[in-house]
Image 1 (cartoon, rainbow, N blue to C red):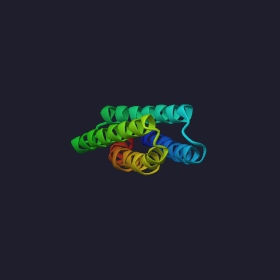
Image 2 (cartoon, rainbow, N blue to C red; image 1 turned 30 degrees about the horizontal axis):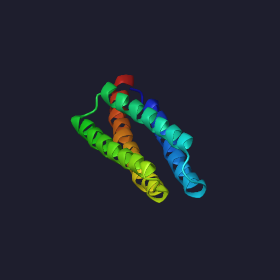
Image 3 (cartoon, rainbow, N blue to C red; image 1 turned 60 degrees about the vertical axis):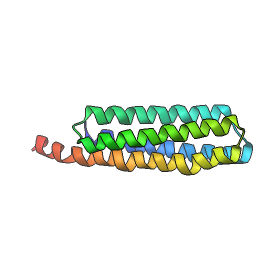
Length: 130
């Protein structure tokens, strides 16, 4: 996979992180919005699917796949807690989970997975182009 694909994934991750933050801030001020929450979760799902596909299409080492599994499990736990907060009408907890736990997890996707993939792909590209 080309390095610029990883740069694109990093840009997408930045956008998703900003969207999560804006959604949480908006929900904190205006109250919960089902459509905002669904839209944000859809974008998270698309981002994580693309990133997972990139991991399995690349020649990454096993540690990246282990990190991906761990971060994915943590993401699912956070999303379950978000759903639970939604069902309990606990807007404070919902927004807190989004602003802190979810954003932190998405940053880990960017740093631990995408950056590592990009760094591992860079030496391979240098050897194939020279």
